[in-house]
Image 1: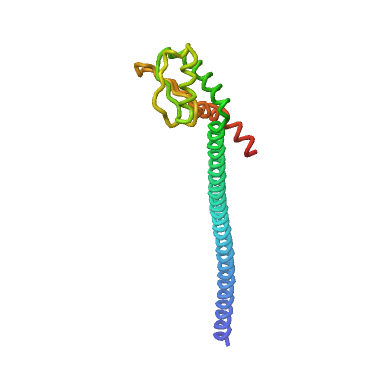
Image 2 (image 1 turned 180 degrees about the vertical axis):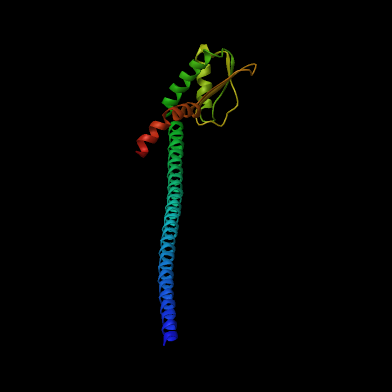
Length: 192
């Protein structure tokens, strides 16, 4: 029985060592699993944050692009409207009564004669007879001759006899000057 007791003792000792090793292994495995799960959760959270950032970035880009398209459409509509106002203004100035046209043309000729004493006066076909009459009636315009009609909505263009100097007193020129200086004000009034 002595041998059997020794064998049992060795077996018992072996079994205890196996249980100890198994317990240590289980503990190590659990620690490894917990560590792996922690790492996986960190990786998942990091990936989710990156995905959220990417989604936010894409949404912001799309919103910016959409805003830009809308602004461009609004600006194009505003430009179209302002162009229509400009054209209507130019047409309205050209359609003013003959009495106004005569006074305006006389005033423009008086202004031009201060800069060009002798020259050729051009006007549109509608105003050419009026300009010819003004030139023939007032002595101060004796240095002027009537030139060929030009394509302007109204007003005059005076050119020196030598062709070196030209003054554009067409209505379009005046409207352009007013338009440029008043464009911001007009835009503010119309679109705010």
